Length: 262
Image 1 (cartoon, rainbow, N blue to C red):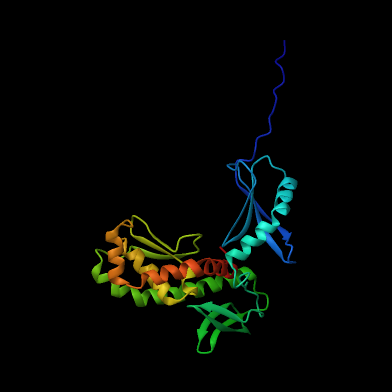
Image 2 (cartoon, rainbow, N blue to C red):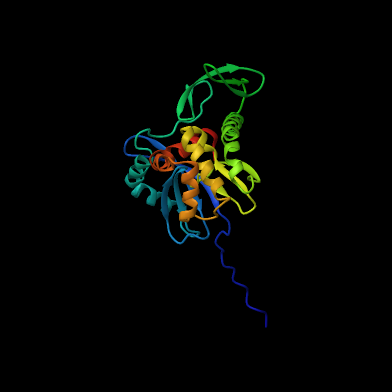
């Protein structure tokens, strides 16, 4: 007697799938929403952070169900976007030949566009100059801007770091600049110090505080009272800078992502 035919059951996707869709808000704006199908998700979920709006779908949810959920919650989404950036609104993007200024060290700098054979971004006395070939891609421009910001951030670190080194048991193994989602800095067990590149957009004293904070973890690998005494001794105004991040942090992170990607 022949064996009965096997029944094949469709399996849910085992990897995260991403795409985007546009959503029209009640105030007339149109925003881009990242749509993520996540095999670990158990329900539809809408969230907003400095990277923008995100719609998460469980494996078996239909795209139509996701879009209905998104439209039903568009007023909530609009309120969250307003709360994220209540004063400045949506962060500025980088548009070749159009963008008029760039944020750096807590202030907007005039942006000057000019044609050239290759992409080059440099700071001069009258602002930031961008040299751009006619067919330069947006991705290439963003990479050049990220390199420019990294060079400026490393210049700041180079000014501040030597003053802290004599009181530390060892220097950091290396310093990395990254686009970070929530943290401003971290110190790995091997001594690698990571800092958010968005720090160079804000006021210099806030950047210096984060650097000092992370260096103090070479002395105290925790946030104990002993750790905060080390911070206090090196940076007495740390409370003011922490408050600055509470009010300006989301805007700084969102602006960096809008300009260079993440």
